[in-house]
Image 1 (cartoon, rainbow, N blue to C red):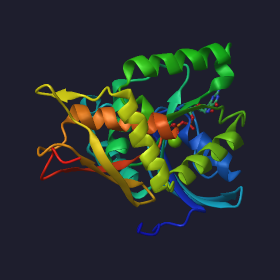
Image 2: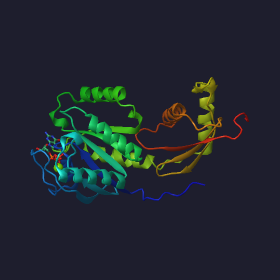
Image 3: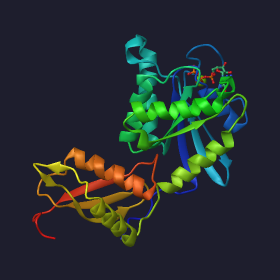
Length: 277
Ligand SMILES: Nc1nc2c(ncn2[C@@H]2O[C@H](COP(=O)(O)OP(=O)(O)OP(=O)(O)O)[C@@H](O)[C@H]2O)c(=O)[nH]1
Ligand SMILES: [Mg+2]
């Protein structure tokens, strides 16, 4: 039996993080249809957390605007260090992390580091490209970005991308719909029948990673939780599931069930008798 969901599906908490000037406060105000958080060209304008609520598509959202994050090496100000710590704390508290990127600038290593952190904490994460009104050929830009991420970010399967203009209120509502749909996906329940179909599919592929010439295979899968779905995966090995197998399994699983951009947890269970079955 699966443990019931702890959180209410119609309540979603999210925070907007990212470099100074990327437009976090503009997006915050746009969603709240009010000028709550100060906005402007001055670098590092927001110095405190702003929190507020809004309702859209019958969902209650709690949203945090955060101070812009700079690279650690660039910071010598104690207050800024403290603010950075607060932002990291907020990531722990929310369901969804919005990493806001100025489309006119490049994605930075810091952006990837923040994304890695959110992924480790099992959050839904969006790379949200803002200021699309300043981009001439939007379609080409999106294709270029997705290609870039596929080639340069190994965790591409774990993230979502979207493209908006906070200032011009473009694609904001469809972005909120995306958040709602990903939040639903976190509560996915996969039936035993479908888990078995997946195992059969894998067996037909017969491309399992090998350790010392022996293939590591899953023997049985069971879902034990929703709301960050958790699956127990029993494998045909006495040893702990090697990382290469864990990656292979996650990839195949996500492709088969079409789960992109939401966290999944697995417990890989080694068997006492790997040669049975
Ligand atoms: N053209 C354009 N400008 C934008 C957009 N969103 C924000 N801006 C501008 O970008 C500048 C910075 O916006 P803010 O919302 O203050 O940025 P922030 O990320 O909150 O910045 P910090 O608080 O310093 O971290 C302002 O001049 C905004 O008007 C957008 O979609 N298009
Ligand atoms: Mg701000």
